[in-house]
Length: 178
View (cartoon, rainbow, N blue to C red):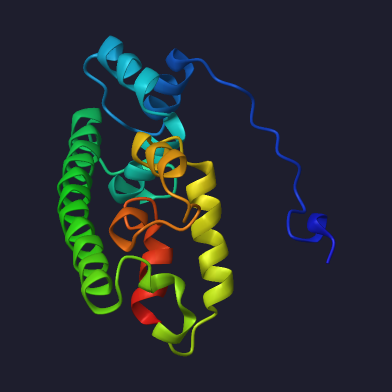
């Protein structure tokens, strides 16, 4: 299908300075008490990103509810940023434990290179998965990978507890599922 059939209108919005962006927000009914702070904020947070937070404060599209302030929208953005940081930190802890558990289990059950043996998996495209692991090892500049590569002949195969540190979360999930 022709991409122009999905977008019948040409994009015509011009580039805007930070001061112009503040003027647009004001014209839409947003109360901005400290213009220089608003401009400074927009220098660090893209207007487009900020405008996504504005939607919850609009009565109709591009018109703010009466009395809405820049500080309220900014506080919504900050709450989301802090919450995202907390969730990301928690997910990092869970992911690390997941990596550790899976690699420890494979090491105990099948030995250091048990993950390289397709018979240790079921209903799993092992070759494609292992090729991706090899590619990840070959791309890596991590010192522990360089050490393994220059010390042991099994490279690009790495022990399960080593490759677990390089694997994408998707590869780790496929390993667990398989």
